[in-house]
Image (cartoon, rainbow, N blue to C red; front, side, top):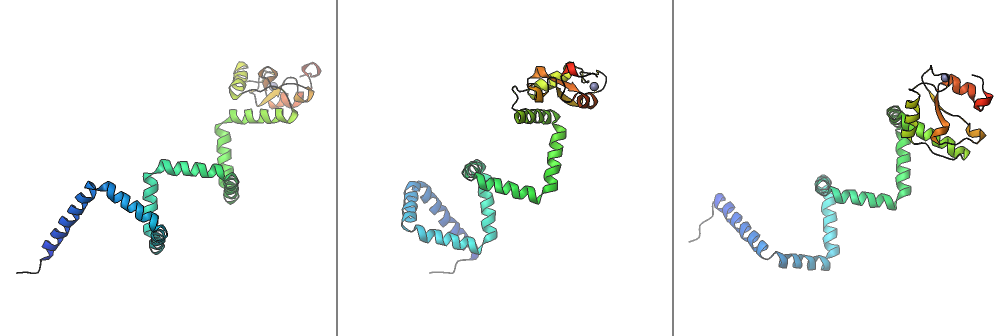
Length: 205
Ligand SMILES: [Zn+2]
């Protein structure tokens, strides 16, 4: 006799069926994978169109699944981003430019913060730019500049009283002086401006 299954019995039967299929799949994983790969090759367009369709009707689900995938594959995502950026330098640059235009105030604030937190970098950059501009020989790293400042106890190397504010070129760049550390001295603004483009022998403090 055949009687109607109760709801519980139906659920149990389905569970058992699923479990059988799961074990079957595990036992024949290679076969199933090969079959799926073959099917994908044969019906590639159809499968992709179906996936596209599912994505289109479930955008929320699609976004959530993309996020999950990205979180689980962060190394691959990063590698992909880096290689894309390397191949699209112009686009990256344009995007950065757009960001700066759109967030001008934020950008300025970030630059101000960086300058305040890294005065030695600012000095190094300023020195190098000036040296480049005049084609001067020599370079002075941030560490070397800091050593020059420390040597004079943080004061002006000329008046020895006021705290230093500028880095002076003893032989001015305009007179062929170099940007090597030996030609650099910390100087207060007053001495630096008064010395200007003069040599030490021409300058009366
Ligand atoms: Zn001074």
